[in-house]
Image (cartoon, rainbow, N blue to C red; front, side, top):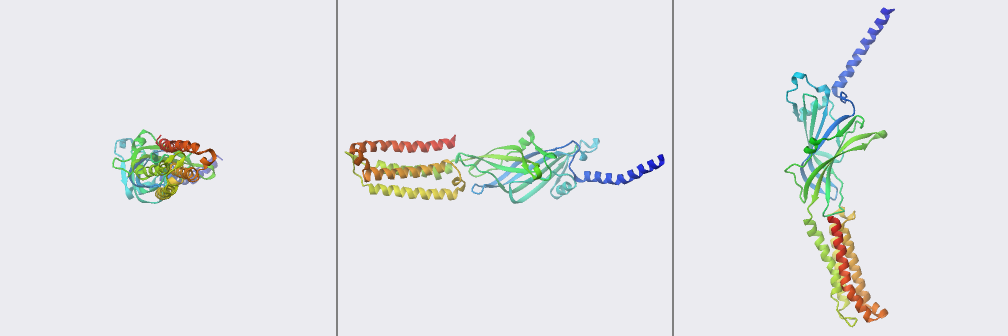
Length: 362
């Protein structure tokens, strides 16, 4: 009986041996490293190598970024006597071939629009099993825009990377000080009309199927707009157009409650100013489409221009052309009311215009 049991055990071991060998081979071939437990921590960093343009109308910027991912695979640890050797360094096709043999932290750039125009891959395998994957990607990246504080605004050029095939219980992103030091714009990088600041890293979760979520890291380069060109092209014309309704009031002359300037001429000035503001509004919205879809100081100044022109037109028609106040309350009341409006109206308009600018600055 004992001999029969021993024979059965030996037979089962013979059957299980190949299966175990296959599992070990699969584990060695490129499955998720589990030697240090789960989730596997992938340290991520993003450097901005070059920036060639920012399309604010489509919320897209063109540039080149370096994405660095680091993790540990104990299966690739070398023998103790080889620990002092330099890391194995591979590039291009050799790096891709080595990545195909081992687990390679499969990631996607979530906000990459279309296919990248160029990619480069580098790989370093250290004697202690540490792996460093470097990938340089050139392409168009989608990024959110917030122009509420235009032209004193700051924007963020984002790069979002996510691991699709594993949930957060299996793989997670993290970053340490060395990753923050790596994540910065290159010394030669520049962007016309903008000043480059710092890169911020943030880990998030991307919703997946069946209630799962995937690890995602967001790298955001802060850029600050240089306001000079926008002030010269937009704000100076807007403030100049605010003078039109004021001039339509200041040019009046009144004696004994009677206006001596023909209202028809001043109404023509107001109508001409209205068409000028409409043309400027159309030009700005065509060039800066993002401004038209949000609340910002530019749209507020345009609205103030329309209100000022409409109010000036109402004053000219009601007081100067038809003398409605004089008919209702007498010429003295009309004269005093006009003298109040002569300075109160411009003061109110300029105060509101300056407040719009100060809100954007602060």
